[in-house]
Length: 302
Image (cartoon, rainbow, N blue to C red):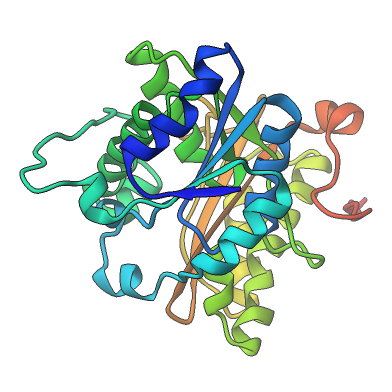
């Protein structure tokens, strides 16, 4: 695997593959790679001739400077992990390479960015995400770009961005990868001390609680959300939001009449975590929906 740090180097490295008509895959990351990221790289390796992994901690999407400063960075480890997972190129640009002096352009998706993470983190968050994703897609010009379902709203926003701008790339969304106890893998998990790590399981408990109720026939959004909130609070997690929304428009749903996205965010100490799952009405879930983790199946009260 080769590491490149400039757009010129990246395009030069990809020129032979592009000339030969080979398929190029891109896994955009902010580094501190974990098994969730590696799953994206492995999927790209299965589907593409050339695999690019970008590592860039994007300052434009952080609304708290302390969060940006604390975000884990481990580039030497990232290089080894990406290479072992099958990457051909690691693109690790500097901030000045991505946002050179005089940079004055942003890309914004309207509407679906106002909710959930947009409401919690401010309008600048998704503007930072969509701008840097557009830049990375233009820099690497991949055929396929890989994102994780853990960042569900981000995947919806990126798909809208690609569709609206007619960008010639396919967006592939890969399932959330979880720890043995169900906690969604995240670079921020490394910031949790042992007691916080134990409490963080409350996010998974919240999803499982709501899924269990849905499997037993509960359809009220209010009841499902309240159950998730109580599960988090009982674990010592501070909920920031829990929402049941349409999985395409992110509009709130009052009743679970079809597939709906249950999305949540919470703080464990000063570490902010997010997670989500798809809920379905009881009839659909009995035939097709699988438990989030292991063989956990809800017990319904008579």
